[in-house]
Image (cartoon, rainbow over all chains, first blue to last red; front, side, top):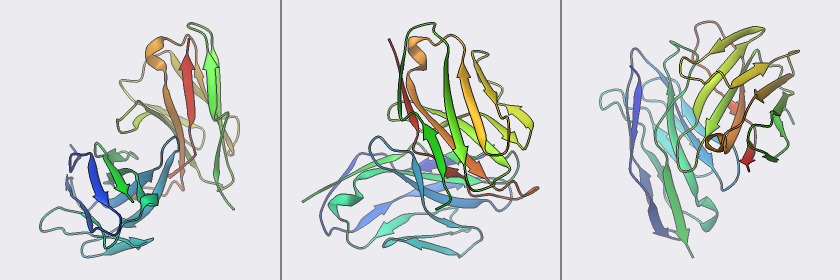
Length: 112
Length: 115
């Protein structure tokens, strides 16, 4: 079945540091890939998505590229801010069961 | 702005006392989902409605029920809440494209506390 493996957290960075959160997946066919962000006490917000190989999703300075050859969708940001502190979930939809498959989530804390 | 709305944001109930959580959407999406999220975990899908068709996940306890009276509203009923049902409950929607891979849009969640 489908699965998503996410980098274990928590991750603690200083403001303006470079961020990478690794995400790899196993799925049938060509899934759509997503990054969601969850701020404390809030629901999930769609951060970015990619629907086919080599697509790059981007939003608010975050980027992720759909790499079919490595089955990866790593999240990156060049310079993090304190306000980026949140939990980040990688997810996929392979279209087989109208269901999102989530990774376990990565807690990011950015210190001033 | 089109959105997914959940009320209330915080709900306190007593052990064994039925409780209903509500979700509404202005996106006019065909599909509505209910997820349970416990602390430091990924959301777990309980069930979803495709239009009026109800789809239950195999491991969702019978204690959890849902109603969708119209396109805009969906309710989660917990018939006899136990202490283990304390969690964040997330509602989400998607367009409902046949056979397609879809983006799900989430509400802000309702945090349920069981005393």
